[in-house]
Length: 512
Image (cartoon, rainbow, N blue to C red; front, side, top):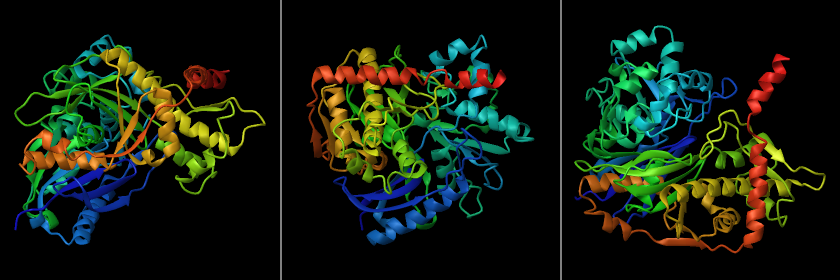
């Protein structure tokens, strides 16, 4: 019997899901499990990597069972993952030395500030394509090596291993520490994930000795960098004999799933945070407007395809806060209903700088504000301001992207959980003044990982075949008055200015 499906594992910030896709790119079955979020101190965000690995085993079993499938039905496995989150684990036992430190975590802000005063800091961006920021992996790895007794010495001896989440999953999927009788696992990372560490040279696609020295990272701890598509190893257990054939950072996977294969094509994924990527082809474009230069994907044996990225830290998680922190709604979907009880935001703006501001401003000291409050404001106005915050942040990133690329987008592809909110998507179209389109398969992160895996093993023959699988599900056309759009954008930017320097002011007040 010929294999019928590709299997995607999408390891995200709040949950992990596994999806089977058929040759037409249609979802066959899905299984998903949430994992615990740990907040041990203000600004600290952690995950239990061992819990995540256990969840992966469970969802693989469930997704195969629900489809009536076995390993013989799977042509290949592709992985997508939260990117800058790091894990360090014991090579011999396979046990994480402590919780994974999540991409949202800001505990290394002080370390990054100290490093920024080094005379060598000026060259970091040119080598890595990234600004020196606590958003990326290297400061977290440096912190964990220094703050865990004896760990740096063990790392230098090669007794512990480092990886982003796809590295951790591939190592376990291919045998781990050998206790399953099929190891040891493959200690590898994929190039788009490596490009988010501040340790990889964006030009050579190799670990950079100067960056390792700058962050004081021993090379012995690092995985081998591989292309996005290729043979990473072979699974065991419920995936016995199935090739692990692709891995991509989640946002690059969404770009691939949206079939943005050509220079000038872009997508935005609306999830916990939101991420806008513009394919720039084989040309490495250096941003002068606060965007990131990153690897979009790399086929085995071919040059890398690059992208410009604008990262927005807080979008879907703002809705979560509105639900769980304030208790104003019971489910995330209710925010649209509540927002529709009013005609506008009533002059209220929410800037969700919970962890500072990411692209295009990169202001880690910023903290969130609710501006324009009057006695007129109701929870309906607040709900609308929550949704509008996502749209205005998108506008700032797209303006920066247009300036860097000299290319005004004609159509805006979107995906992710928040795209089910029609009011939000209409507002995005209004503030961007371009049509917004959503594909039939909204799970483009998982789809992109599946596409990459299937392409690697010949399940799909070429990129054009994948393009034919893209079908329109919904479209929103701009209809906002241009004058109102610019007035509202100016008001939004005024609210953003109130967030800047907030932690500095708090420190000054405390010292008095």
